[in-house]
Amino acid sequence: MELTSRTPVKEGRLLAIDGLRGALALIVLTHHIFFSFGSRLMLIPSSVAVSLFFLMSGYVLTRSYDGDYVRFLLRRFLRLWPVYAACLVVAYAIANRPPIWTEFIWFPYISPLDPKAVDPPMWSLILESWAMPFMPFIVWAGTSSTLRTAIAMVIILCAAVIYAPTLVLLFFVGGAFLSKLELRSSLLESAIPQWLGKISYSLYLSHALVLIVFVKLMGPWGSIFSIPIVFFAAWLIWFTLERPSIWLSRRAARTIP
Figure 1 (tube, rainbow, N blue to C red):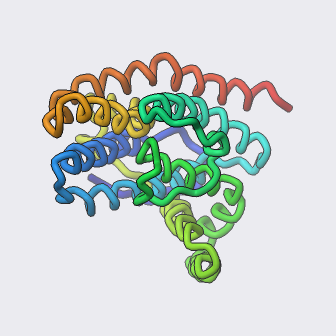
Figure 2 (tube, one colour):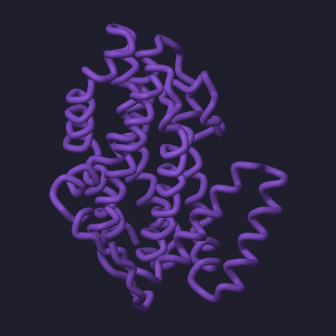
């Protein structure tokens, strides 16, 4: 694995970042499998993985941000919402509960420890989505001097005293600061991590739902038997829903003035 400096120009995606995203999604899946057996062995690695997801979002979005704020928000909505909404519908059907409709617009914030969450990973998508309107601040804070980044982080810490979830912006600003560097890794750029990276968003949001169904039917060992279905479901969601949403977000960016 190699980190190299570069000038802050807008470039295409880095394959190593895609591979890392797939590896982190796999860590979160492993945590939930262990958790179905009552083990918290993977809790800390999973928490670190989610934090790195936020860091990578700041990294990737800063590299691609062109200052067109409204178009940026539209693209992010079209990119994130369809898979999120579909998984939320399925989650409420599995839980056999009437939906809380505001959750479809990422409100209110749900703690990662909230037992009422019908899809456990959804809390992080709520944070990610509400961080998007702060993208100009994130870019401003992370792409200039180290002093400006430090000042921005102090501002975020002060805001977090009032509203704790604001802390997530630290990771986005950190990712923006690191956007001057490139990550290269032959391992992460190989075929399997790349495939995992491609389906990582769908895998992240859907895997807990498959595990819940299998554990209900078969007990803790159902989480092991569900693994092939977990990956198939993630690929199916990617193919039928996520891939079109990516196309739509890019299309909207090109056609909407």
